Length: 106
Image: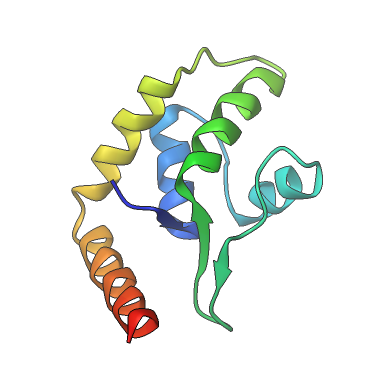
């Protein structure tokens, strides 16, 4: 599994887990509240990336804090991540992250 998740993918994961109306604004709200992690990497005006392990914990914590709590486990989050990885966009992001890592190594 990947180490970084793009903001768009995090929103897709949330929709698969059953979060309603989870978008960039709600992501910013949960980050301000300290539940969702700060971005690990950010490209100016392009993409925001979140750490893999912290995303798992954040979704489980958010699910408990909703008005109507959603019973989500770490296995559910792993399932949603695998579904998002199957999309074509996710494959392109994975390739982009690999290229970024190769540049850092050189």
